[in-house]
Image (cartoon, rainbow over all chains, first blue to last red):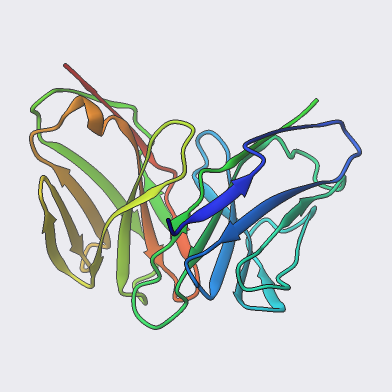
Length: 114
Length: 109
């Protein structure tokens, strides 16, 4: 089945630790995205990548880092510099071609800082 | 002003009711508008998208865009308890989507 796999589904982190969230897609999509979701704030864009080895900051990139070494993978690292990392993180991908930018989402990863 | 504004609800309706969910947007330069449905603790899934002004229908769902008033709407006919979810509107910003905050809908039997 084609889709997006995010792991882990739940993650607990101590303050001061970096953690990496995995995102893998087998849809052969060019573009990939990371969003953060907090109650009452909708989806906010962290980083996105249109092609391999290139990515752009979204609206809330501070305290996060990404890499795009392979087309199918777009891991997100939440660093200790992120002041309030507890949230629901969503990875998405899209074909990246002209026309409607239709995103397919993964099931999400919930990060809790202890 | 946020680029996409959406009433967070919650909206509670009886089964069989017609539901109207609405968003306003501030930048009319882009053409595609989308509606996503998100069940609790799940990722959003695309319901439908529309191009420019007009209506698009898919079963019990109708999406409507009014570019003159910068208003987008989703209508759900004969609502079912399984429609209980958060509905997110989004504007296509060419290389990314700008989302509203989402409206939580509860359909009770």
